[in-house]
Amino acid sequence: MDLRYFLTSLTAGDVLDILLVACVFFTLSFFVRGTQAMALLRGLVLLFGAAVVVSSLFDLVAVRWLLERGLTVLFVAVPVIFQPELRRLLERLGRAGFLISRGAPESTRARIIDDVCQAAERLSERRHGALIVLERSSGLQEYIRTGIPLNGDVSPQLLLTIFWPKTELHDGAAIVDRSGRIASAASVLPLSSARNLGQPKLGTRHRAAIGLSEVSDAICVIVSEETGRISIANGGRLIPRLDSKRMRTILNALYGSDRTQALSLPQRVREQVNDLVIRLRERNNS
Image 1: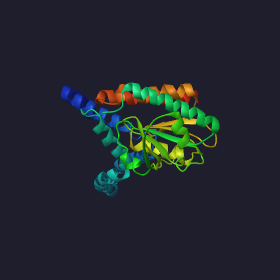
Image 2: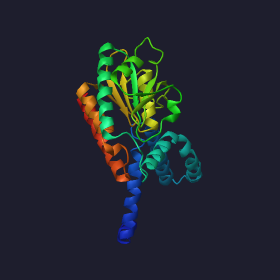
Image 3: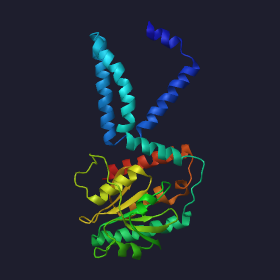
Image 4: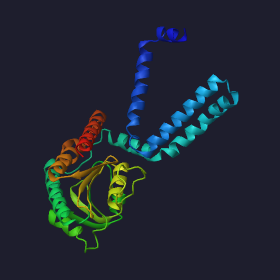
C-alpha cells in the first residue's frame, strides 16, 4: 500500500531529483573504483545495511539508537577516510572549469611523443630503468622542485643520458612540464597508497608512477630495470607490457590531442570513458 501511494504521488520533479542524485553517486563511484577505498566503502555499506535490517526485524532499540548516533560520526569520518579520493575529485572539478590552460601546441606534443617512444624503446633494449612524467593540466611544481632543474628540450639522447645507470640523475623521475621541456630530473614522486595494485611484484618506479597518477592527471612512462618492459600509468591505473606500437597509440590518445589542454566538464567525462576503454582493451590483450 505504501509503495503504491509512493508511486502514485511521484511527480516529474521528483523523478528528475532522483535521477540527478543517482547520477551524482554514479559519478563519484568512478573516483574510488579500483582503489582500497572501494573495499572500505563496500564494507561500510554492508555493515550498515546489515545492522539496519537486523534492528528492524528484531526491534532492537539500542542498535537503532547507535545507528542514528553513528551517522553523525560517519559524516565526520568520511572526509578523513576518503581524503585522497576527495582531493582527486576536487582537482578534476577544478580542471573542468572555463579557464584555458596554456600548454605546448599539438605539433610539439607529437614530437615529444615520438622522442619519448624512441627513448623508451632503447632503454627497454638496454634494460635501463626509467620514469618519464608528462605534465598535463595538474601542476607538478611541488615535485619538480624535489629534483635537479634542467629546462632542456626533450630528445631521445637527453633522456638516454639522464637514465644511464652511471649518472647521478637516473634514480628518479624526469618531468616534462606543460610547455614541453624537461623541467627536472631525479625528481621524487609520491608512492601509491593502494595496497592491491593488481601485480604482486612492482618496484619503486612503478609505485611512484601510480602514486603520481592517483593525485594528478599526469602520464607516466615506466621502463623496468629488471625486465625491460614498458608500462604507462594514468588515472591511478597501470597499463603494463607495452610494445612500441601500443605505447605510441596510448600516448597519442592521452597526451597528443588538443583535448587534454582545455576541456569542459562533458569533455572531461568523455575523456575518462575513453581512458577506461583503453585500460579494458589493454587488460584483455594482456
